[in-house]
Every structure is written in C-alpha cells, then in structure tokens.
Image (cartoon, rainbow, N blue to C red; front, side, top):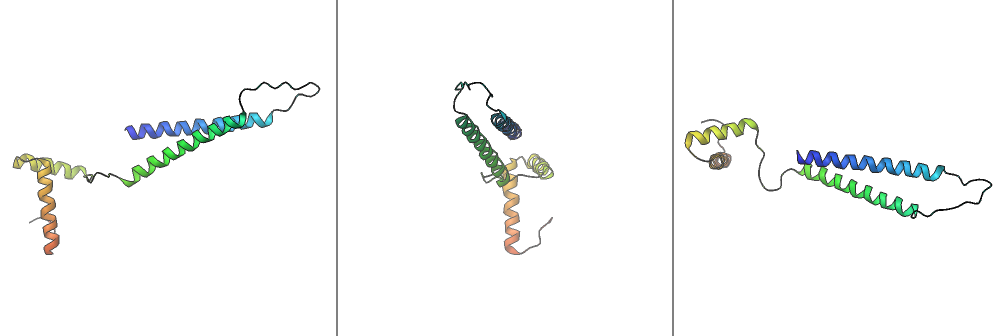
Length: 126
C-alpha cells in the first residue's frame, strides 16, 4: 500500500511539474513588448534559472519513478519467496497438526523436494 501511495504521489508531482512547465513556457513566449511605450522590466529572477530548476525537479521525479519501477520488477531481494495463498494455508494447517512452526514445515518440505530431485524420483504425494 505504501508503494502505491508513493507512486501515486510521484505521478501527481510529475503531472503538476509537466503542466507547470507547459504553462510557464506558454506564458513566457506569448507576451509581446508593449508598443509605443518604453518597456519597464521588473526582475523576478531569471526565467531561465526557474525553467532549469523545474527541469531538474522533473528529472528527479522521473528518476524516482524509474527506481520504483525497477525495484518493483526485481521482486524481493532478501532471499524470501512469496507463497501462493493455498500453500500458505497448507503450511499453517500442517504446522498446527505437527505442533511445529510454519518455517520448520517449509524447510522440511523443501528438503524433501530437493532430495526427490537429486534422486530422480517423481515429485508428488507419497
């Protein structure tokens, strides 16, 4: 849930930044100098510097989005395996029947699976 919220916030930030850049550049290039009057310029900061700042923030947002996508696609990195719900239920039931922890049951099941693979026995129920 936290990743979804973070991704939504990031996408919102990117949309806001993109709209800001579009509107800012649209306004910057559509204003003409007043005719017949001396132009009075009030300096509010260099527009190019503001545009560069927005571009940098936009790039940072894109990099964060790419990082989230790559992190999500690579899966877990701690060596654990995500179990299907039916296997998780089976582990919980088996652990209750044998008075063991679910981890011990899982380790025993994986060891039996590896032994069957090494011996060339068919896998499945005994």
